[in-house]
Length: 106
Image 1 (cartoon, one colour):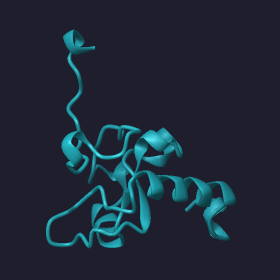
Image 2: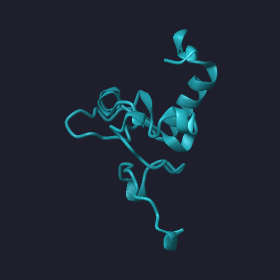
Image 3: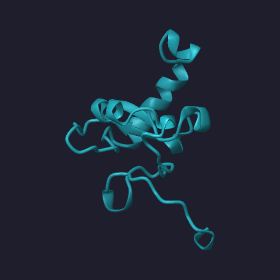
Image 4: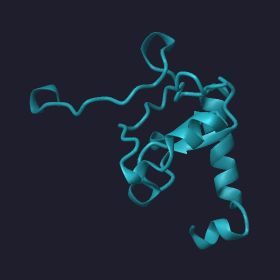
């Protein structure tokens, strides 16, 4: 655990967390079958914090059960591409990990 979290979250994190929850309309973007409550109260890092920091492109709103079930992204339990800044995916679908683009698609 980082020393910043030892005494609670920072003011900057609380502001960013509120921004991500608002962007995703307080709706869980992980939507794991059998555990999801739908109402997001937490923010999940889709890529390990050591790699992405707190970049909003790598943060998604999540309900507590989905966030706990998903675990730490840097342990290999969950890998994902960054979330678009527009919120939900195409057609209002839940966000899903993307496959890397080939050189032709770039």
